[in-house]
Image (cartoon, rainbow, N blue to C red):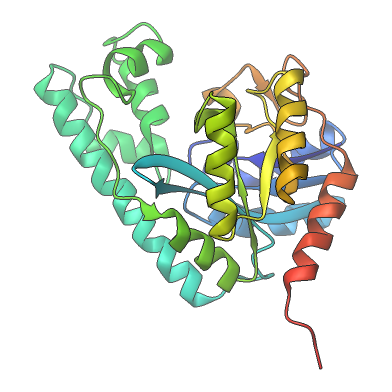
Length: 286
């Protein structure tokens, strides 16, 4: 059993990198990908702990991008053992965009009677706080009854205080991952579109831009959806990835390795096939 989609407290998860690795060992994972939002810090910190317990740790990242006018996440895997300064410098811009959005969100919330101090968000949200951290503080301060209510009433795209991010163009993000030696995968494709014909066309367009895989197994996916995305990947000649999208207490119903009520089961062969796909795209030595 493996998990190729998990977050630490270096982005919007609640487990520190060390705690996440220890949990992976405790639940018997053979491999784990740390895929924090817009940062490699969680992976960097997790490496020594993974070596200590013999866990196969995959370097990953999840980024927010813009594809044909819509916000779409993108996973990057196998970024070279120590991703170079060019890629790390580029993601600093993504981090700055995230912080700028947070300031605008807090200003909108305050205009709607919800005051969350910036220093408190930084103190409780870690290096890269996001909307889940803001939602938790809204619950703690008594502005809403639950994190779900915070999103429904204030933070979701259709809510009164939503602020869009300045997101990297999808094609640019794919190129950045490729230049850093990695491969790209579309996570939770059902969040891009619930229409099967539309997601097929979108995936074709993304493949033309260099997309190399689709996240087939995910905590959002039913067995029928897993089958659909697996067939789609096969039809388009794309690889398959899979993971729970673990966040710890931010999404307590999702368990590392098994997802929501045990609906995720990703085998080691998934990682092996992804590695073969990755190796097939690497420059060949003369």
